Image (cartoon, rainbow, N blue to C red):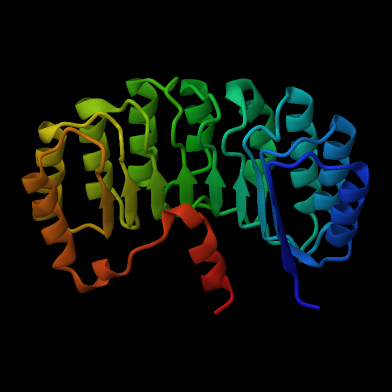
Length: 284
């Protein structure tokens, strides 16, 4: 039987339901496990983690909207990721913890497992209450010049605790990474200063195809900088999202027109389905 998916949102999960999920994980019949905003006991969360550790088929793990709700759960998840690292047939491409109160302290506990996982290429840490220390850890997952495998898709939406210094460090890491293709920074208070640093990163990157800056406090100043970058530098950029900013429609249209002049820019990645494109590629 081909691996399938388990997707549950907003439910209180019973111990019997958790048992069924864990059995499916151990039987290698689950490719996608997605629990969004569900209620489950600490004991049952531990059972889920043990099932994840034992699975040979799991490729996408979404524990979103408060599932990883305390430091103890972060530790259990970290141990699960460390364990499945040793299972050669396990390919966990995507890990999403969107909407979990992870904080920098939680990410510090999880980071060793993330950094040594042999197959993780997409990570969603949106709305995880991260700050500059968390960004420093994430930069370590973006090794320069292909020195080792690293992230290709990164989502850091809605982490307002990160300062301009933190975003600047991320921009440098992206500029020197040969692998990052999708970067989602929407709904962070970036402003024009950070946008300028990101423009330099885009111009320097050989691989960045999608940059989401929706609702990030940008003005026409940022748009002009991005326009100059697109117009004067050869980049891999295909999609630039600037909605919900104080940018004139004219400037947005000019940027869009320049991107559309490249035939390959017609291929738009679906950023809301983080990791799906990479999963499709591995199956080709």
